[in-house]
Image (cartoon, rainbow, N blue to C red):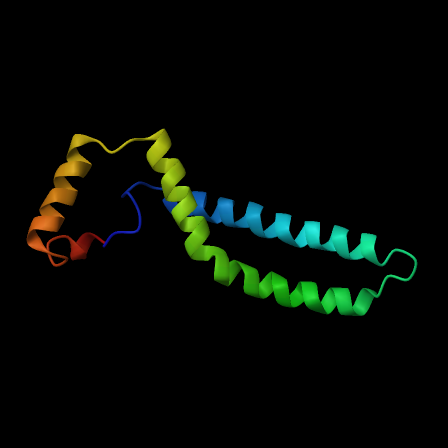
Length: 102
């Protein structure tokens, strides 16, 4: 099954959504952690937790951000007749029909 719609830059859109989500989560976490510990901010524990989160969050949210970008792309650029025919051919022939273009 194809994960993209066969246009240049599709992965860049998914990457942009991932970056906005991940950077937003890390920055908001820094804000909350500092606000909760404002008199004596434990810098090293916050740094370690955020470093681990900055590595784990992108890996775990990639399917979500990719799906979100595909939904945005489908909303902005609806499926045309050629794509619908390609999808119907793929469904009729099984996954082997267009697996070379995936």
